Length: 95
Image (cartoon, rainbow, N blue to C red):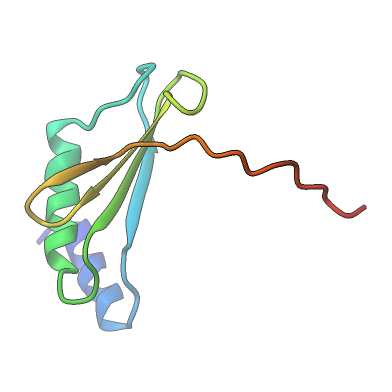
């Protein structure tokens, strides 16, 4: 058994659940590799009794938003989360 799978089983046994992963890619607009997709699928399938999907984010070298890719894997399909432009106004932090 691989280290990642063993750690996942140990953490699940203690009540901890992996809801997602993020990492970076050296490309402007990131896309998941075959290894990324396989890992997301395995973790989504492992947690399917506890949640609907695994959030998977990859940070590329372009500025936000095109430099950030976000997907959700439901154990079968990797779904791309498309950003929506929203005017949230200005938030002033207290000093």
